[in-house]
Amino acid sequence: MGNNDITGSPPANAVSCDIMPQGTLSVEQAQQRILQDLSAIKHTERANLHNALGRILVSDITAHFDVPPHRNSAMDGYAFASTASTSEQPLKIVGISFAGKPYQQSVQTGECIRIMTGAVVPDGCDTVAMQENCQRDNDWLTLNSAPKTGSHIRHPGDDMPAGERVLNAGRKLNAADLGLLASLGISEVDVIRRPRVAFCSTGDELKSIGEPLGVGDIYDSNRYTLHGMLKQLDVDIIDMGVVRDTPEAVEQAFTSASQQADVLITSGGVSVGDADYVTATLKKLGEVNFWKMAMKPGKPLAHGRLGDCLFFGLPGNPVSVMATFLLFARPAILKLRGEQLSALPEYPAMSTQVLKKAAGRKEYQRGICTQDAHGNWQVTSTGIQESHMLRSMSQANCFIILERETEHIAEGDTVKIIPFAGLL
Ligand code: AMP
Ligand code: MG
Image (cartoon, rainbow, N blue to C red; front, side, top):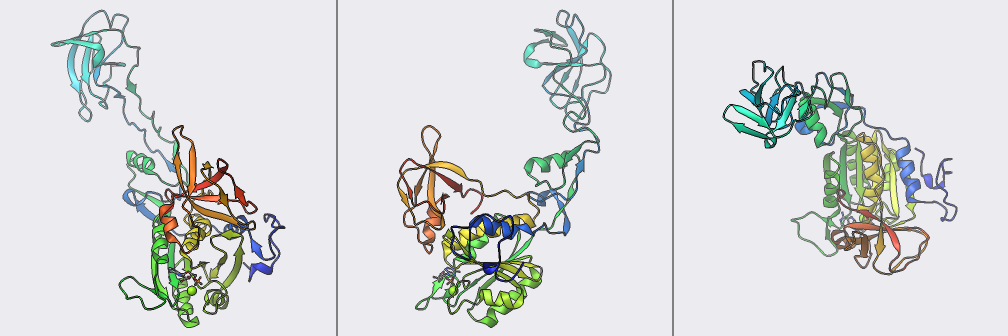
C-alpha cells in the first residue's frame, strides 16, 4: 500500500477511469484496491454449536458414522416381510417398535409389527405400510393394497454415509449445518476468529446522548449507525467513543485502536477542512491512501493501515458514512472474517418517477421498493437526497443505483437497486 494513491498510477487490472477527473476513483476501483491484498484472519478458535452460526469452518467435516445410524420407518404404520401373498392373507401383529424403543425379537413371515416414524425396522421386515392403507382387527392386519417391497424404509447412511465429507473448509455455517453437525454428535468446530472492529466518531461538535447540546452541537449519530451495521456482520465491536478534533486526540485514539483491533473505522475529519486530522495522523503513524470517490453520497475516503490494523476513514455526513461503510468497509470485514466475497446483490426495478442527477458521480439514492400486483419490483425515491438527511436512510429500504454518466431516468425505466435487508 503506497502513500496517497491519488497521484500513483493505477494497477494494471484497474477499471478504466479515463473520463473521470484526475485523482478520482470509481467505486469499483476503490473496492478492488481495498480487497486485493486482503486475506482472512489467520487466528482460529473453537466454537460450540450455539456460537457457531455464521462462522467460517477451518477444516472439512467428514461423517464418522452413518446418519441415520439404523434402518428406520418413514411412516407410522406396520412393518413386515413382503411376499406375493402379503395383501391377500391377514398378518398377525406380534409387537410394536417405537422411536427410541425398538422391537427386540425377529418378525416371521406372516407376521407384522406396529411401527412409528423413526423406529428401528427389525430384522425380517423389508417393507412398511402406511396405517392409512391398513385395516386392523385386534391382532390381525389386512392391507388394502400391496405396497412395493422396501416402501417407507430409510436406510443407514442415506442422509450422510460414514466416510463422506459433508462440509468443506471455508463454509459459512448456517442453521441447517448446525443441525447436521449435531446429528453427527459434533459439539464444537474450529472456526476463524471474529475480526475485532474498533470505531469512533471525530468532531468537536459531537455530543453523546445525555449531554446537553450547546450552540452548534449535534448528537453523534454515526456511532450508532456503525454499531448497528457492524452487528449485522457478527464481529467483535470496540466502541471508542467521540474523538476531538485535535492531532493529539486523534493520534491517541489511533494508537490505542491499532493495539487492540483488526480494523479501525472513523467517521468525519477526513475532508480537507481546517480541523480534519484523520488523514494526516494516518500518514504519520501508518500508511494512507486518500481517495476522492466518484460517488454520491460519500466523496472523500481514507484507507490504509496502522501496523496490522486495517483503517477506513469514512466521511462525516450520516448518509455518506452508511453508504461508504456498506460499499468499502463491509466487504473488507467480510473478507477478514473468511467469507467468500460477493458484491452487494443488485436487482432490477422499475422507477415509478423521473429521477435526475448530474453526470460524473455514481449515485446511491435512497429508495422504497415494493412489488406490484404481478410480482414485479418497482422503486420510488425517498425525496431530497442530501447526505446529512439520515431520515432518508431510515425511510428507505434500498439504494437506487444511478450510473456515473446517467443524468435522467424516465418514469417506467428500469434501474438497479440494492435492498437493505440484512445490511442495516
Ligand atoms: P466532517 O467530515 O467532519 O467535515 O463532517 C461532515 C458533516 O458530518 C458535518 O456536518 C458534521 O457535523 C457531520 N458529522 C460528522 N460526524 C458526525 C457524527 N458522528 N454524527 C452526526 N453527524 C456527524
Ligand atoms: Mg468534522
